[in-house]
Image (cartoon, rainbow, N blue to C red; front, side):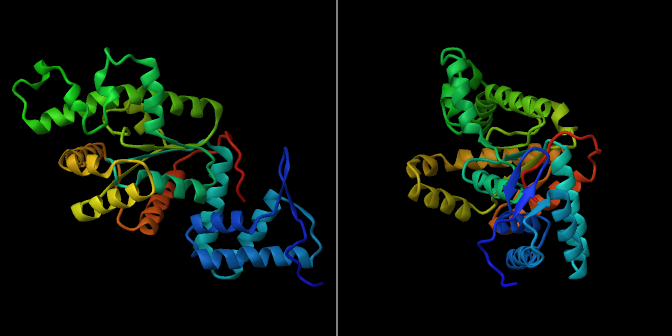
Length: 312
């Protein structure tokens, strides 16, 4: 039989069928630690094998078995075991990943990369949650909420400034800015856990120690906090972001020292709470490190079924 990319193979699930996709399978393999080029090659070979055997419909479980044994036969034992672990956990559990860090460290980029690798369909930025909270809480009640994270201190009452140095004021303003947003973040986590859905939440407002302690004790709520130690690299991120968005570069650079203070504050809070801090210099290295941390946490989850996954 001649191999034909146009032959449509359907992957059967309990409730629906979906077309076989080399891209989806390759991303699943990449998430398990396989190099992207090797992942796509194996996915292509799986598709070729199905076509040669005239398989037009295959269950998701059978497809996973084929992938697993193909990996074993090609001496990818470690990746094969990790691949099954990821598929089993994503099928049975809701996963909430929280990617925190100060402005400009790259939380959005890493969050979307993780979502793509893991097949998690929902990524929510805390800036969006902040906008929702602004519609619920008046400016007169919490004026800091209506400022940026690094200018919130300017909305503090003058009495709050007494006997505090500038850094303490900056961080106090940041905390007052973050607190109402955390109510929204925690509500999304609670709803995801109740409904059995997975989500990635990213942004500056994810601060360990300020969130309710119960979330840090949940094995399927995973904190990943990013940082950039190099001032030059951090500033370059702002410059690069300004080229593709309407965010004003000057405003970030003018307040860069405060952003650095917030960055260090989040790092210290993470370490105090024994949560990972990841230096986000290389996107690929950061994503790989995040995946390793998530995989390690997966091993602590039980087998109670909660959620299915759209990935292979």
